[in-house]
Picture 1 (cartoon, rainbow, N blue to C red):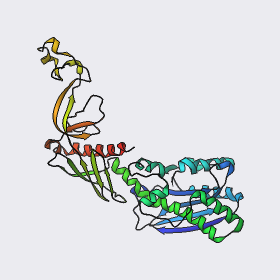
Picture 2: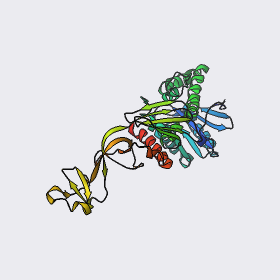
Picture 3: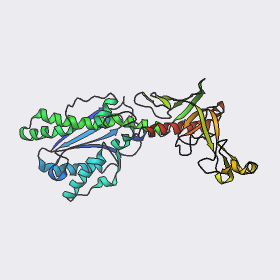
Length: 360
C-alpha cells in the first residue's frame, strides 16, 4: 500500500463559517474499479482536513486488490478522530459502497455514526437556478473558475489503474493520485457554492427600498456574515435579481390591471352578479333578492383597480389575487408599503425563496 501526503494553503480561499466551526471534519473521496461492490474493489481513498490555514490530504492506494481491507482499516482509524464527513454524492455511491465492503470483511462501519454532508445534495437546488446542464463536481468547479490539471474521469481512471498494476509505471501512479487529490481539493473549492443557498433561504439584510415612477420595487440588501463566490444575475417576468459578492439588488416588476380582494367568512356575504362583487349581509339585505345570491368562497371578493406587485406569500397588505385558485398573491404598489420595514424585509425573504422555487 502506498501512502501519499499533500497539503495546500487555504489562506486565499473563502471557507464558509459552517466549516470553520469546532466540529472535527473529514473530507473524503474514493476510487473503485467499478460501480458494483461485488464485482469491483476499492483501490484508493483520499482523506483531508482543514488544519488552521492548511488543507492536509492523505491518500491510501492499494498496489494489489488484496490490500483493499488494509485501505478500509486505515480509513476506520483516521475517521475515528472526526465527527463529520464531507463528500460529493457520497450518499449516492461512496458511503453505500463502503458499507457493503465493511460488511463483507466483518468490520465495524463507524461512518454510519458520523454527521454526513453531501455537497452534491446540498448544491442540487441550484442546478436549474444557475442553469447547470449537469451537476458533476467538475461542472461546479468550472462555474467557480477552478480548472483541473487532471484530464481523466473516474471511469477512465479504472484502465489507468489496471495498467499501473501491470507495469508499476510511476507516471500512471501520479495520474491516479492527481485525480483523487483534485477531487478532494475540488470539494474545498466548491464549498462557497453553499452560500447561494443562504441567500435563497432569506439570510439577508434589507438596506434600502424604492418605488420608481413605474411602480417597480427596488430592494437593496446585503449578506450578514458571508459572501458569494461570484456575481450572478437571474431574471424572470416577475423580477430581476443581481447578486454581487457582498450585496444584491432585487427589482420586482409591477403590473397594472384588476386584482381581487377576497373576504373571509363568505357565509356572511352576498354576491351581486351585476356588480361582480360581494357585500356584507348587513348591507346586502337591502338589495332585491333577484339581484343577490349567497356568496361562495370563489366569488366573495371586491375588485380593485391599480398597479400591483407579486408576492409568493401573503406578507404585505392588502393581499389580493387574480382569482380564487391563483397561487400568486399581489399587493398594491403604493408608497405606504415602504413604511413597514419589518414586513418589507419579510417580503424580500419571501421573494428570494420564491425565485429559487420557480426554477425548480
